Image (cartoon, rainbow, N blue to C red):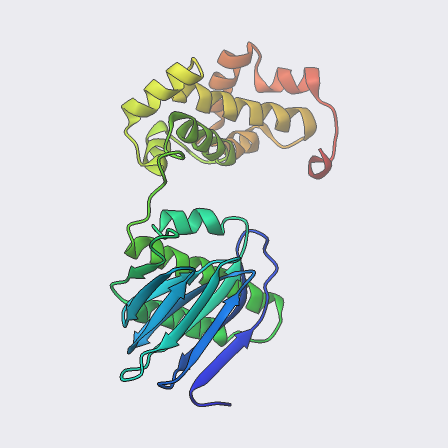
Length: 282
């Protein structure tokens, strides 16, 4: 193995975000790459030294502590500085959510270079990826988790945020509904939903009243009751277990809420509407 270079090529299978390869390299003073066009994304993290990055008709000096983005379809060229050649670590990746992740991290066509507070933490993640170089289900899970961790570190370092298009009222409503529907089995509260969305409870209430003509508390209760109705119709799970499965701490509180919403006790509802069915195939 070349002591000045280490590369791992291992494509993972996720469609949203997947790795193609990663590595590190200690470049010589005359080393360069390109001009070339890639069909995937690539990030270089400069650990030492410096170099130059050319994209279309723009050029950038890139120093230790910075990283630069190569996007698919762009003609790029980069080379080490002759007096202080760079050492970098890099990842090649792709996926349906990549454009959104990069926008959140403030990468733009005019600014493909960003400065990080610590490239060493990124380098540590990439080194960890390279320890899982055999194609196994476990290694693929490790690499997926580390790739997401790498972007989490980037987002944290670069103060990532949702863009103005995403941060509209419909965005918050959609995310709130998704969160509630995925957590009807927990003791979820409106406070939890507001905290998840990083907005105030009063703003959340105003959004629900304006967009859905109901309160978030009522929507949350309706979601729990809808889940309970399905369990009662399609299973013989005891009512006490249905209560726990729908986020209620006890069967009494659940029965009271269920009757208030449907006009029937859980027992009567089951007796009236029970239709045996495999829940896994429903």
